[in-house]
Length: 493
Image 1 (cartoon, rainbow, N blue to C red):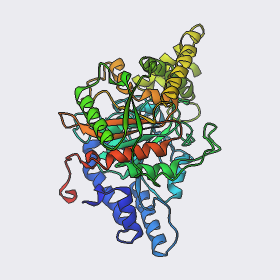
Image 2: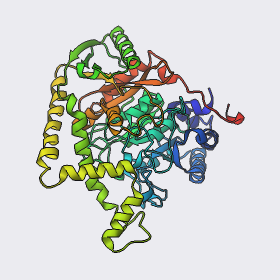
Image 3: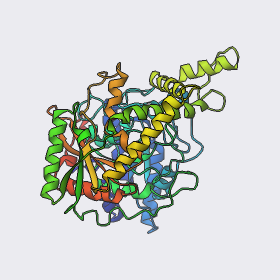
Image 4: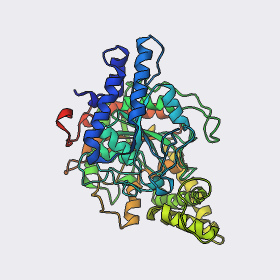
């Protein structure tokens, strides 16, 4: 196995045993990025000089027998809507083209405390608004399995970076499926923790009641490792919960015997791709073989989830994005006729079409005379969706369903049809509305050879159980171990 194809735990073991120097690891990944990145376009910024410097520092600590962090020497990519001190944070928007964050997000601070190496900032749909990473203000990221297809979104850069072995692991953000959907389309593992499990301090806000930072990794154990590092209470985030973080690796192999798995009929209705349906049926057979019980359930308000989400999320987005006015930081129009004209020109020049669309929809939903009809009603239905899950979890231990209704779609295929694009998240959105944890893991491939993801959902703060259930399937299959065939230079073959 080539070095960059290893998992985090494999690399970590060799570094601590002094079989590998951190400098070797980072140089390998930098070369990999130089070789593959031109065809994938996963990164907005590659942090080459600082990463190499950090690697040398960690090597010295190891040589001097000093204590090193849990992720010592592990290259991690960070979605470019998560603040990193002294490194650009653009949110893939022209309005933040030259913005350098003066502080680290809580999760970035935790990575640095554990001696991880920030290898770069990854591409995304502008301000995390999209499902394909086609809405970036800088580039279109391509799916490593087929460069004519999208990697999903909005964390498409992070998912593609992990799938193409351009980083060992990555952080993303998930407002309506933005970690899980690209994880499914790129054939990697994506975790959206419970709302409040991971601090949002330093995450550029999109929908504040929905946003959650999540992980993208090569396998389930690596997901447990990364979540272990970033989870925990943070006093700077008022929604961060004071709940003990368990050891996610402990008893991860405990199995699923007698586990009750709920199958919601609403998630297997019309519109589900046949290849995805077949992959999920195969998944359930494996769980039954392992001793789990399959139970049919209903989540009756699922049909309203997409509508509710695009009212709530857009309303919150229109409020959060009001701060980008050209006055305090970010892009400012060079010519204007008064302050109102400056606001209009700045925002027109700085924001892309999808962001403008969502701001307008959000402002409309919050406007006088429409607030009760839209935002208030959506908030009430959102609570009904949460109650559906509460009632379901009285009968079952977890819920299994598709992550995405389709495998990856071609670049440009849905770009002119926003409604069709929005339906890409039909199976992931409910978890955000309810605030529950969810994981997507590889479970098959389409006839075109594109990855298919399975989603597992559990009660609030049951990430440990999610990881156990996911690992039980992963160790019985090899979908997670398969690699896309990429064009690379001779040095990397």
